[in-house]
Image 1: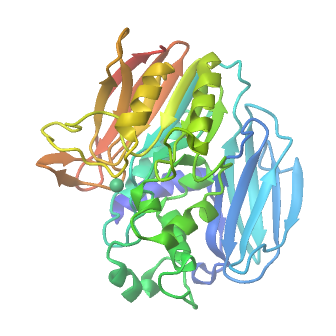
Image 2 (image 1 turned 90 degrees about the horizontal axis):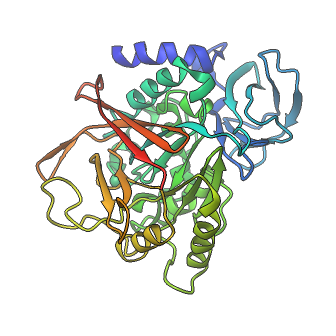
Length: 417
Ligand SMILES: [Fe+2]
């Protein structure tokens, strides 16, 4: 608890100041968080959720006087969710925002993407947060340390964080969660029906609480994992796009560009075979992206043949597509980097190709997992990616069993292909 306090006090004060008359009476069931749009250079979406029907007032600007714009936002859904997309923003600019509801004000900031002519970019990444009430010790630590890292150099580092799936694990210890629902951070007087998407939304409220203010300052972007999509939990699959309304092209696949990099987010839980809509989209994306300095595929299962982790001798994936489809496409179209998760263990691979050094595949460690996977100790981590012209440096900060930062384990340099 102390370590949480130290980390979060520093982080939250800088980005999310909260004025409360009484914390237990907060009108915000979910604090404002950022959602990337299809035009991150000029737009961003803010979402928040209230405990009752209230009208919110949003103000934003390039300073904390918030003089650029103001909007009155009514509650938009029966669950008191509010959404506001800010448009007409300046590229490559830091903005500050304040959302008022009841007697409370919540503040945050974000930075729009630079023009496409930019040749540098810093962004962050985490694998499998897999937040569950009985097994989420590290998610607040990882988010808190990442936010501290952003604050060291916000002009460069306040961009976005890529998540490679399994954002939460609602099926884990569900009876625990329901038994202790009143111990959640936010009071919930009325519980939706069990197994309903609305029930999963409560988990999302808790997810955001535990994300330690980071989503108010750094948009999370990424793909769905098996636990978000296909583990026999239809309520989870329905809740994901509602809580993360990315500019999906179909299913949960979409793409975005930020400065010199184009990110292609694959949904391995929607059809990908030849002739399917996602396959046509994916090949068109990769073809068009050949002109982008950097092309990065984001997906849950790494397209590398087993063993996938040191000492691992069996495949460990729930995707039929990773090896047979994604791997060959990444090689064919000269993808610069594939970002994956799922194994919860940090590892770097290269997809063999006829010429060249191979397509690098980074499997990111689970952001909330400290566990033995086939006798390998896999520690939670976050990653920082720094593009400078034709090279990229990847640094990982790993954590010990107490959630303390232990080391920057590896500095990997990869070149533009
Ligand atoms: Fe996972």
